Amino acid sequence: MNFAAVFAIYRYEMMRFFRTLLQSFISPVISTSLYFVVFGTAIGSRIQEVDGISYGAFIVPGLIMLSVIMQSISNASFAIYFPKFIGTIYELLSAPVNFLEIVLGYVGAAATKSLFIGLVILGTASIFVDLQIAHPFAMIAFLVLTCVSFALMGFIIGIWAGNFEQLQLVPLLIVTPLVFLGGSFYSISMLPPVWQTITMFNPVVYLISGFRWAFFDMADVPIGMSLLAIAAFTGLCMAIVWWIFRTGWRIRA
Image (cartoon, rainbow, N blue to C red; front, side, top):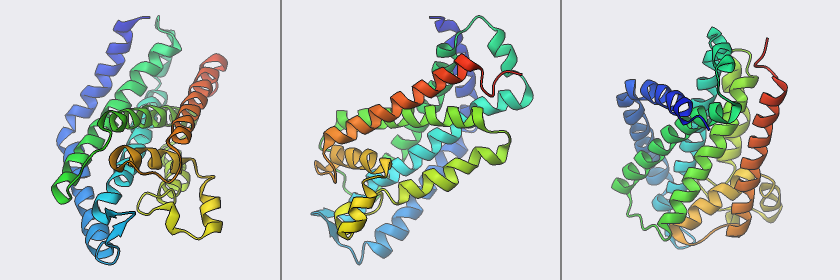
């Protein structure tokens, strides 16, 4: 393992992040505050509690998941697409580094950025509501796993994309609807039975449910199924990345 190469890629990506640190810090704080004003105040005045939890606190895990998933995808997809766009990816492929070291550098940096954003949102949310985290280590573990798995997905999207518009295609048309329909701001038990069954086919449900369990010790689906879902998704993304570098799909002339 060439740790120097991994660190070089990781440091380069993190330096790009720190150059816009103020923007990266202020943006999630403002968006989180707006979500609490709209959902916590307007809707929260009509929905006092969900499963015995105040609505303002109930939406915090879903809000964190929404931001973390989108940030992980966008950071990783842009990080690998830009070298393709300007042609420097061929210098990287010709360097004495293997695909695992390349993935560790780019995905690790994207996951670190998303983890930072998630913690910023958590800190901002604690200003608006009284949060009690039932399983803090499980919460951090779910957050890290989500950052890594969706950073891998973003890495795949960045390799697949042929232009800047396609970078936003999957997040906007597929991922965002899945997150909003995955119980981010409501409990699955509030839906009619038919829609509850349909919602179970949404993989994001298991991520949000497991993350919410870490906060409130309650979940819409068993915690074991949540762990299995995120493990399967991470494994699938890793297999696809391995296949991409094995075949050179979309990365070789």
